[in-house]
Amino acid sequence: MTAGAMLRDDDPSPRAQPATTSSTTTTTSTTTTTLAPPPPTLPPRDPRRGNGQPVMFAFAGDVHFEGGLRGKLRDDPAGMMAPVAPVLSQADVAVVNLETAITERGDAHDKQYTFRTPATALLALGAAGVDVVSVANNHGIDFGPAGLLDTLAAKAASPAPAVIGVGANAAEAYAPYRVDVRGQRITVLTATQVLDGDVVNAWSATDTRGGLASAKGTGAERLTAAVGTVRLDSDTVVVFLHWGVEGQSCPSSAQRDLAQQLVDAGADIVVGSHAHRRQGAGRLGTAFVAYGLGNFVFYNEEGPAGVSGVLSVTATGRDVDAYAWVPAEIQGGIPRPLPPGPEADVAVADWHVLRDCSGLAP
Image (tube, rainbow, N blue to C red; front, side, top):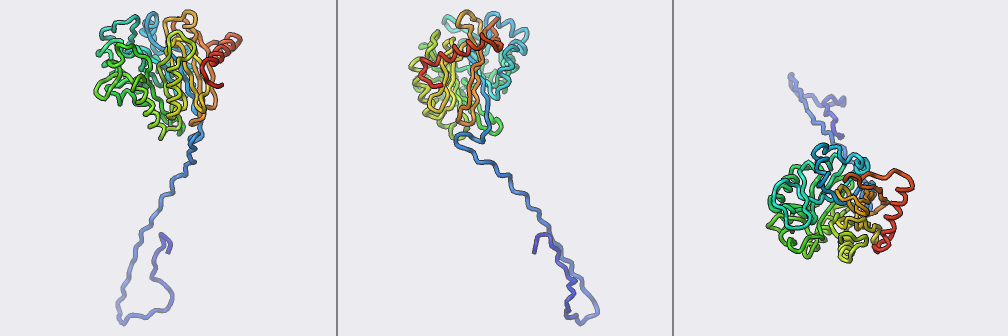
């Protein structure tokens, strides 16, 4: 009997009549059950390319809001980065290094340069299309415990852009940024390999103390372990680092060693900054590495320090399909992309030459 059929008692075939003058009518009710349609069949997830959808990333280097940038941030936070906003906004995920404590309080650490900014810096970056900022760097706690508390408060109050690389303990500091882009599972981790010797312990987050995600000493082991963990449920794993030697256009041996460790652990894209110079970029096996992104929003724009740009990377799962350097020049602290033409072509060619001392393949 099919679902929903009605039982009937008017069968025309002969039947024996009861020996009584009264009649009895029996009514039988049925319940109709409608089965829900089966869920749609999802396409299989390829171990290298995920669901097959490409994702565009934009990476840029060192950002702070000191000098004349402080006034621009005060007067027009939403519009101050307008010249470069279209380049960042076209990416699905845009990441920069925010090289400053997010605070207006605290005592400056005793060193040559200390940077801080009000939380409106996050408004400026978000308005320009930045999705993630890392404060895991050698200026993240320039203004002591009070500055750290304010930075954590700014992090909690800013769902976009997300702030990573700092936390009330190590679990929070090393916690990744995760996002789903058209079904592709993207994970971004961060840490700093650059911390002054007198603050390595004090600034590095532990299980019981707030601080930064460090890639120094045992911090490197924790970072590579984190990469291995997120690899299990991510289609693309990105590691954004603060590393290198200031003023150098070639990666250090420490950078190259850490890049290899992270790739071996499962990272697909490894990028970073700190040298205030661009450094080489290219392929390390099947992964992509960019050792130095240079300055981005920065008060020093003289000579090589003012050579800037945005690194665009398109990845489908673990496969890096394409990458390109969008050259820019810092003017008034703000990166301004070069228009198409001979000057831009020379800047891109110079960027490719930096690969020669990186040990990377095109």
